[in-house]
Amino acid sequence: MTKLILAVAALLAANVAMAQAPAAQPKAATNAPAAAKKPLSEKQAKQQERMKRCNKEAGEMKLKGPERKTFMSGCLKGEPGAAAKPAEAPAAAKK
Image (cartoon, rainbow, N blue to C red; front, side, top):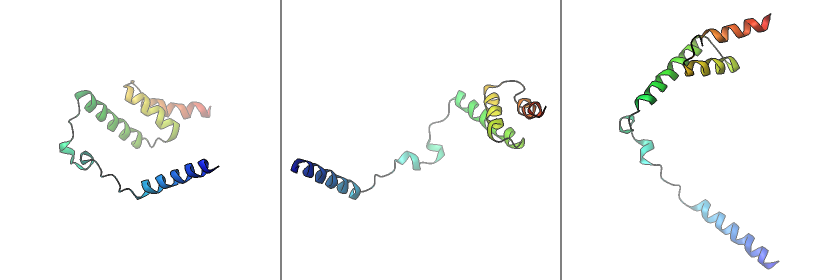
């Protein structure tokens, strides 16, 4: 019984010590300006531009929920006619 009490007391003491430890300093890289970051590869830059374009198109079409997810998936894959798919889905559901 005393071993159990000692173990619990040790855990509580360790917990209190951890709570009083000073917070870790943030990494310098997170506070660095964008110019100091590693430049994107050509592939990453293309993907980022594709994401911006698809996101803008989905916003202009006022897509939300599953329709937006379906559109974004097709658009990011570069599927032709991805913009037409969301508009067709609700029309087919109404029939």
